[in-house]
Length: 591
Image 1: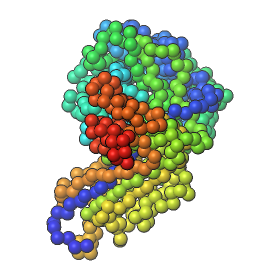
Image 2: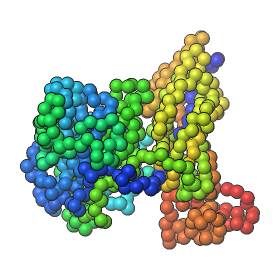
Image 3: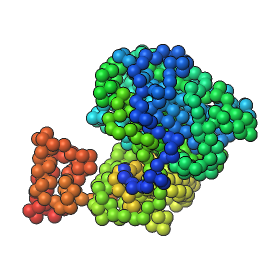
Image 4: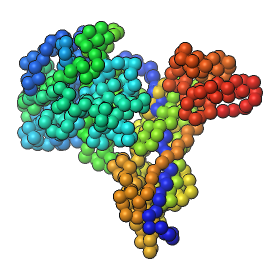
């Protein structure tokens, strides 16, 4: 390949389709709900009105402040990676408030001392939680824009945590280190209508905003119920699994010493949340604590079963010594615990359904949203009789593609991946290795002698799914590595365009200055554009709905805004209403 310019410009058209199908599964209570040891707002408890001193002690706290109950030793380490340090086992969530502040506390446990020896991996560093991100998620105003957990540049707010997503509403995210005193903890809020934040108006540093948090060694709980022996994460749904009280249980190394447990408390001025005490008491606010390993969430309270959906799989698709749960994509769907007022009947336990195998059904109001760590999202709505969804990613580059690594995650309760229907995922990549597991598809390729030619736009990857569920879900393509290069004097010069899931600024790389990334994605299926009211027909009623929406007389759901955008320009305008009218009268045949 002849190089005529010193600086070669790359144009990659790489767009990841992010199909998010949020499913509403019908599952029997006996198999689809967490066991009785888990609870959200148990006994209708919503915290108490009380002033708390943030002093690194749990003396001000009591069990009547409990708003969410988890379980001990119900985390990924139990199933893979039990030898590792920094056990991030969330157990309980507490709340209080007064006229000036909101107070939240969470109990974390490390019961591995019942079988591990002091100084062993899980008990190293005194068994303490180390310098890893802890996230307190709050939902103060349910009508506000829900946060994306991304910054306005498309990257994660903190560390590599672009794998955490919330379907449950959240409008305040407080990030802090598990090792109090490290880093610059801050509270983030959305600054745009996509729910993204930034490090200026969207960021409130703890130290300058009056937010305080501290940690105490020990445990304030009267009992510590948890799993003893478990081979399957589904035990969290089974009341008859090997549950023990770690306050009294004696393992091979003795009874649990609570010196390995950690209790955190935090104070947040109500003025930062834009509310007062009466708002909490009359409306209630939601809360969830998420513990992470820096790449992915590992446990949370209230519990969400996405914390265990990849517990027995391999980290990075290849490391059998640690769990994929530590680098997978987690989409939180469980309800937050309520503080001040539940707003509804108390929920005895989170209602996140247990993953089950479903028989194929017809799709109803199936919304497919594409998300990615790198590229813009795309949404499509499918008809009730759709049986498959196909997602394609096209790539174009002035450079050759040298190697890459990616993973695609999806909800196996909504979409089914049939290997026989996907024999050639990457048709334009010769040496391609794929690893298919339920909920995750991973791929890797490399060729430094004959890089892959994408000088004209070609299909990079295509995935076809059978539709087996309804509602909303997430299909997420995470491109972890993508290397591009060119031959000069018969020597290949190449560099990373994507590294560790982030786009590299190639303008600082000699020979690649001026390079840029952009993307294109396609999605195929039975798109019912124009049927805004979802009655199975396209009629003047659909036009009327759009007109009322444009006149601010009514609103449209996110699904309706997709099917109403019949000219596919990304907006719902009078042009869309006119096109539907022309379709009804036969002046246009399709959208």
